[in-house]
Length: 379
Figure 1: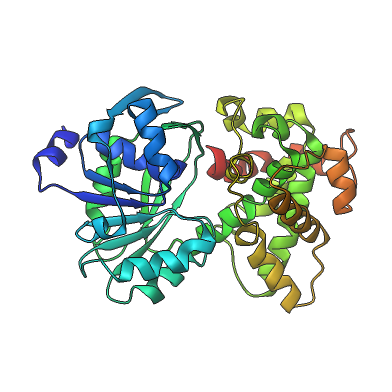
Figure 2: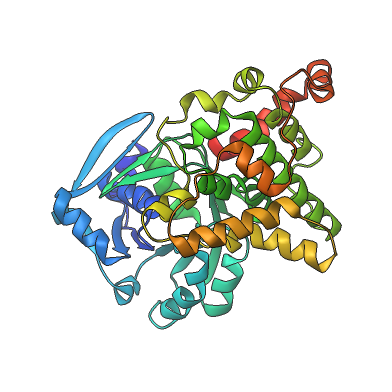
């Protein structure tokens, strides 16, 4: 009923700038379910993929594939975004400044720009480039895999959209009409984005390991490296006076304890692992394998920069950053095992025996709270 109301309302026009996995999945959903007219602007290869597949398809772990025929896929250039009601920006962080400058030259004043990018600074870069437009922060907490012009959401999660005096309303309504994942609005996204940034330290670890995320999460040593990296980032942000979301309700240290559990107990605590597609690889590894490496500095850089300014050592983050820079130059994953990566990071391989941390978890029940916080990345 709500979808029918959206179809009968004044047509909504949405532009997708940066036609990668997330942008094409959300744009494809809105187009195939006819809640918005969608214009895709991205790489030339996207046009080829759509033509080859005779359209664009979207699917998910809880929904069957739906095809948007090639005749209904509107592919354009940046000037074609001029009269959009919303432009969703999903370009890589190092392209944000250029994207903002290009949009500033064509957008109507009434167009609302939504940043659905990794990292915490992209909305501020866009606001500086687009002083006459409303720029909204957004955040995605699920993963989408891509095979040509087929986009599959392979985990649960949520879409977060910043509340901005009602400017977000029509887009939020459209997204809620066409997707089964929660679309959540809140006044401020920054602290959530910083929390996600810390959890996203798994992204470079996955790229260095070169294996599916589920397989990697089943390895306690990989999880221990992830937890150590988050600890370093958390210490840097805390020393800089930057608070993370819900630290009183669900402190990140709870999640770190869950990550360090022996694998059988981790699997019992971390329910989303059961629904995570066995072939799912995270964004940084997928981009590396596709020959368009993502810049690791957008993920690790903020924490490393804060730490250096305050003379706080971050050996694990530094090692991950160096390994990823080498991978970006070579264009391929080094495919390090968990023990090899632990040695490179100077992280002690965890003892498989029942540890003191496990005893604390067992007696205080923090596993549930820690697992809940982790689910914000994969749920």
